[in-house]
Image 1 (cartoon, one colour):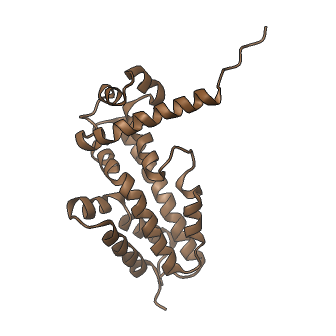
Image 2 (cartoon, rainbow, N blue to C red):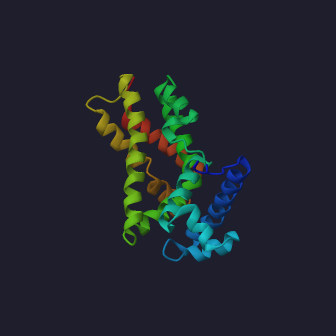
Amino acid sequence: MKSRRPYNSPRRQEQARQTRRAILDAARPLFIERGYSGTSMGDIAQAAGVSIKTVEAAFGTKAKLLAALRDFSIVGDDDAIPVAERAWFREMLEEPDPHRQLELFARLSCQIKRRAAALTEVIRRAVQADQELGELWQVFQDQYMGDQRAVAERLAARGVLRKGLDVADAAAIIGMLNHPSVYYLAVFDHGWSDKRFEHWLADALVRQLLREP
């Protein structure tokens, strides 16, 4: 007896994708305004106009929903392509002028943080309250530092790092200066514009990383 093959039409897949997007769109302002603990799956379902079972079927847990929302905010779409494999990230790495490369890096970083910094702050503040979210936060940090290290490795390969600075130290400096919490502090708490932070970040990276001509 032949087993039945699952029915996955393009139309059904697109409907599922649209439902996920609607849930994410509804969840974003709730998490930012109420925080992680103050937002329930029921709140999100109501805002999205779907049932709680639909939300759970799409994401599983609240922690995984927030993680998916964070990933979506970082790259701007729901394609399963990590930052390091995105064309715009690869183009930045291939920029031959190190000063220009760091300026491009700062610009891309600000574009990402404009979408994701507030959500990242929600996660950072909630990691102690939810073990699953805490584990996901560590995954996020590992992924983040992997991207910063890629920039450090490219600069090191070109021989433009300051004297005495190795890849590990360079990656740590990039990771600290470029961390979403720093952006959140500057823009949300101190009222800096995105452009001001972008210029500050680019200048700080050049001063801290590159050797003098």
